[in-house]
Image (cartoon, rainbow, N blue to C red; front, side):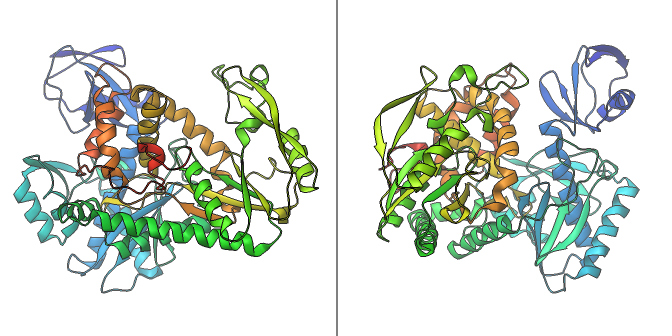
Length: 552
């Protein structure tokens, strides 16, 4: 018998007992399903067995970030397996998990068949049949060449190509009955764990609707996000035009010395989009306030500069305004549930003063503009007077720009609202999407280390709080935007890799951020690293790696 501690409780089990058997005893005490364990600081899937006396075990549920990602990944495997079962393995098509729309995932399904409501219902029923059968999900290890042959045999050219660029000698694959797949991360031990899901038709593909991490015990009704969907589809079409849909496509372009062409095409497409937005603003004739908002590390500052240049080509005179200059004095800043200053809530902004100043400017009055001193925590006035002429337009950047409460005194027709985010449309492979938050997190980590001396551990520790603020203050208003702009580039992760890896390797095993650092390092391992030397100086990516021609 082996003596172990599970969440601090001492227990004895025979050697070789699976972790799944161990957690059965503790599951009744948890509201959410246990999907993984941490054994002496290492994440373990539940099919693994107990081998060491004195081990300490922590339990991970769907409510934890790692556990939730495991559930999503497992549900995706279930969906692709069910599609193959229904249409047949020789359907001459492909299944691609394109992007997330809140808790749902848009999946394109193409082949020599009609993806209609009847077929989607068959897929959903097959998924439920697999869940009810509680079929084991086996993890198997193969030499790389054998794995690539398996991928080729299943028509997965994207995965076959992906492992051409991997240095490892072996590949871990997951097997569900006769279906093999590669998945970037952990899996639940059997299909019986994947009980909450829904599948429905959406545009030309389907939606896989799953619970949220905050409420993993129930499905929420899908909230349509048509503007976000169209923006993501536009970026997907850009990726197809450029010929870079997956990491292996990017790596191939790097090896064939076509990266500069990829960069120039991507930058040209983004500039065309910015020019279109500027043209629409100028065409309205009565816009005086361009409100720009987006989550952390979206490239808002560079975007506002590039938009201003385009507005000038229409004879307008743009002036930047930072909503941060309207912060209330530090002692008046609200605090969160932990007692820390909450700089991201609307109450941290002097909304009424902002509206008075903007209204006065709209009426042709001269206004002394504030400047917030972040060292003293107080708003200051330094003789910066502003008056709007006929061609003047204010480009206002701030987290609450899309919230009408922020600009409640301004006429609707005087405002043009823009939502910007780094919406990554590059996939690891067709079944493994790259979360948009990963791209933004790496951007922030690289920028903050360069400009503020912030270590990666600190960036990772703060990220949960940053994301919470975004969920509360930005995402609920994104569909109200007049325009959306995707600031992500297909090539940037290959550049960020060079800067981010040394920062992530600096996080030790005994620190709570270690698992996230390890995950990101594994993720960056898919990419061939490239220098930012030939990156245009007005690129949004320059805001993070340095060398921008703008004051960012």
